[in-house]
Amino acid sequence: MNEQNGPVMETFRISGSQALLEGKPLPFITMPSPYKPPVEPVCQICKDMRFTHRDVAYGHPDFGKAFPCNCKKAMQKSCARGETFTWLGASQELAQALEKMTFETFQASYQSTAYHNAHSWAILASQDPTGQPNIVFTGNNGTGKTHLAAAILHKVREHAYTCLFTTASRLFQSLYAATYERQESIFNQASRADILCLDDLDKLHTREDSNYQKKKLFDIINERYIARKPTIITTNVFDDLNEWLTIDSLSRLSRSILVIRMEGEDYRPIEGRQDDLASASYWQR
Image (cartoon, rainbow, N blue to C red):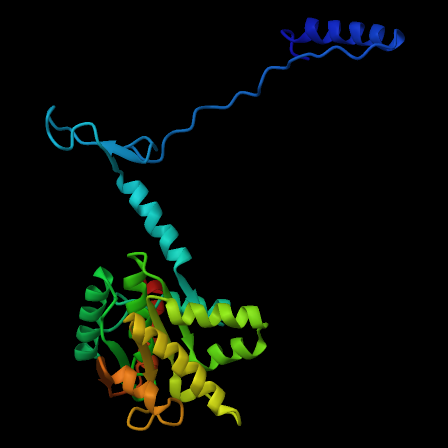
């Protein structure tokens, strides 16, 4: 027992026993709070106050004003990334793969024109995506269409714009499996997100009720058209999308559209060979 607290605890035991014998409530004793060492501030600029003041002379317009510290801006950006981005229907493994699909991880020299067009569009959309043209990535399998589409969304969401990425198949799988309320939520998210990406449109299996699929896609595209919100589509097929989209949907998409054609060797085996080389060089270091 701590010698400093010893007499106090002894007095408590005596008075407590006496109180029990006399049928009185036990006396209350206040124990000292456990010692908590001071926590060092994470941000050395604002000392975790999240705001700073500029060193300007009295009379300057900024004198006495509080400005967000860079650490606060970083926190806001991090929160925005988490709250404004959705991989609809993606498994954890697929979501992790999509998270790595950025402009920095794309081989610009492999599809230089496509990379330049996509990157330029993303820079403009980062300022404000409203009114930006729709994009259709089209080309052979494995040429990097999905990679560049995901890279655009990564770039834009850093500026707190809402984004939704989904394959056309997963969109309808989610709708078919959902309750009415959940269907409305998915529909609203697809219609109202600042940027929507429909990946692999031509992989959507058309069911007997294909009119339902076309109508839902039209409703989404139409709402986005009215609100001037861009839609990104990736597809191997471009010349004949009537199997998946109505004439009205195609008309609204084509009012303002950037077609990015990507032809060439399958990009994924190249990536795999690079990963193998990187792994080999790592073990040889």
